[in-house]
Image: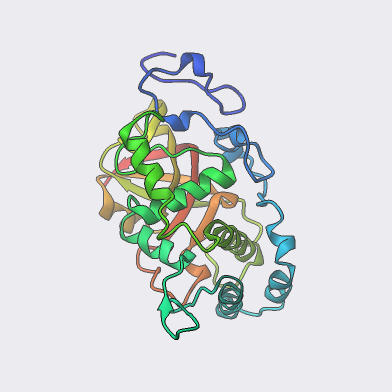
Length: 296
């Protein structure tokens, strides 16, 4: 360790014996996760260089009929409609954000992936964002670095507030983690399908994305090789844009990264009928990323 920079071993895990006392919790990883790559390896820079496809448990096999139907689709809007009908049938999630009608004829709120996406895009540091970050913890094993403020210790007010929000009964019900598992697998299916107007060919391993920041408070600096390059431990879930000019609206510094496609959990084109298009937003699993740093 030199000049306050913490180095990682070949797995991407930082030995706890060399962690400074104020280092974020996300420099550690959960010992287990529900995907086919260990959490410590998944959060390391080496995984980003040579990514492997990720599968969340038995999600695809449990919903085999859905993916068989998707394989017959000829265009993205049809695939999106099939996916949303499946979500409505299994989880009672209506595409128009309305609640589920009970026996008394009244509609009642049920947590849904659509409400979480809508809430995230309004403010990722609210309860909806906490539930999404908690899902990344559960499935991929990466701890968050930031939720409204830096998260440094379990025994802290910041961590307690995050934990309370991620377990909020308003958004953490109706098998919300299983909904998000399916959203991820649908996103990955769409990426590999290779529609003619898709933002990446089906053989691609990475996509170039941009993020605007005013400072590095939300992201721990692992290394700074030079003024134009940084290795950052990104929040366990964060937003990027496919458009550099749009990213510039969110900060004076532009981070550009080659994001491995298995780390993309949502992007604008998989639900083309919803108002998630404006910022060209991509939701990306974090970890250590080598990014280019430039000023507007």
